[in-house]
Structure formats: structure tokens, C-alpha cells
Length: 391
Figure (spheres, rainbow, N blue to C red):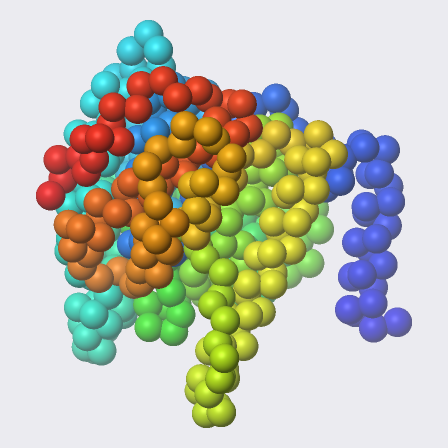
């Protein structure tokens, strides 16, 4: 029997043994709590999620969150929310009255600053890397030296990266960081900027982020078949979206109610694909990633249909009218398409682009939550005053 066959059989056995849970994912720790997933997508995702968070804040959802998972551009937004959480002042309706000042404004200002080209050029110098330059920019403009130990215990923030060594995900949180095949690090003291840089290390130009671990730092876990050098000595990480661009894994195994803010879009159709090998390579990789993401969506919506989870999912490329809300906010299908077609790089966005993304995220969250009967149309004043004062 080959090793690959043994892994498949072991997976089948594991699912069979735990089938008594009655849960499609065989999740054993599902609770009646709310989790939020912020997808990848560079600056486009970062700003889109700000608009969604503005609406969630108006509706008093932020104090209800128990899990927040960020991937790539979504990790930038999640990181800012985590770093500012202790400063937020909530009123009796659960709304942070200083949300714009502490969370939205810094992110919007950051969206007007180009990062990727400068980081790539500086990364060509001896002793420097593009990934480290991106981390330095995050720290300088957003996180101000904060580490994972400075973020709150609740909600639990998780930042996803992809381990190039194992092909699995590295999850970074305050309590622990882990790759299930390698082991875990308890109470990691990693900087927030480094973790977010690893999550958003878009390959090949901003990747990889290399982390080195002191001896015995990585502890064994059940099933960690690679708990040995060199895997326990260093991690070579790339963008979390390579593994799971929606950030679902942590949340759907823990939370009964799942809110997903998706700033990714479907790979567009091409009538005459290029015959050049470089173009075919990128096109093929995009299609492979799209199919993996579609599979996760099918599982997510299947669990919702089975009433095993309560899902509210909004996506940047979905016209607001598609949610079927009679009095939806005025966001046209053309505007949604324009937002979805914006670039995913970490380069400067114009005020008009920022405004479009904020409104798209706000309107998408509003329509999805109302279509799932998780919110009503109360207090939508911020849609009229967007963008907030960051630019």
C-alpha cells in the first residue's frame, strides 16, 4: 500500500468513526456562536471588507462575533480590527461609536499608499526581501509594533497562510499557531505585521515569508506526521488564499452562524485563450484555484441547506438585486461589476475606487443579512455618508 493510499484510508476511517456527530464536516466543537470570514483579494478585499464591517457595526454585530478569520487582503482588515478592538467603545446597541476613527479610517488611508512595487524593488537589495518590506509597511501604517499577544482573547482572530513545505495551512492566533501536519506553537509572540504579511504574501513577487523557530518551540500534536526537522525548524509561507481564500476552515468547524464577506470573483471567460505557455500557466492556476473555492462554497451552502449552519454570504461580483431584498440599497449591477474587476494588488487606489468598494461591501453585507433574516433595514445612514473620513 502506498503512503497516499494509506492517507486516504485513514481519512475515510476518521470520517466513519465520527459520523455519529451527524455533522457533515464531523465537527465536534460546533457552538451556537457567530463567526466572520474575510476573504483574500489584496487592497480590493481590504477596502470591500471595511464597507461590510461598517454595516455590521451599525447593526450591532461586532460584539456578537466569537471567531474572525482573515485571509490575504482580508487579514489586513482583520488585523486592524484586532489591533483596535481594545479601544472600541460600544454603546447600548452594540455599536462601536469610534469604529471609523480606530478601524476604518486607518485602512482607507492605507489604501491610498502603494506598497507592492516599492517592496519588490527594495527586496532586490542584499539582505532584504519583498515580504519583509510589506511587513514593515503594515507595521508603520497600521499595527505600530503590536504582536499576536496584544490582540483580544475574544473574539478569536485567526490569520491564514499557506505552508509551501507541507501544502497545508498555517493558522496564526493568540492562543496558538499551528500546521496540523507539523505541530503547534503556544502563545506565539510573532508580530501582527509579520503574520499579516505571511497571509498576504502573494506569489511569486511578495512571497515567501520565512519564519525560523527555536528548538522545541513547535510542540507535537495528534496526527502531526511531519513533526521533525526541517519542518519544526522553519516555515516557508505564502498567501493564505492558495489554501483557502475564503478562510472557512476555522469558522465552519466552530460556529453555527457563519458570515462570509467574499471579495474574490469568478475567473472570467475568455473566448480565445492564449497559446503562450506563460498565459496558459496563469490561466490554469486560476481555474484550479477557482474550482477549489467552488467546492468549499458547495460544502458551505450544503450545510446551510441541511440546517447544520446558518450562512450569510455576500460576494463582490453578486449584483445586489440578486439577493431578492425588495428595498435593497441603490447599488447597480454595473457598479458591482466595476468593483469586482478592480485589481487585487497592494498599490494605490483612487478616492473613487475606494468609495466604490466601500459601498459594494456595505450594500452586499446589508442585502445578504436581510435576505437571511439576520437584520432589517434600520439605520442605513452610513451608506449615504460613505466614504468615511480617511481620504
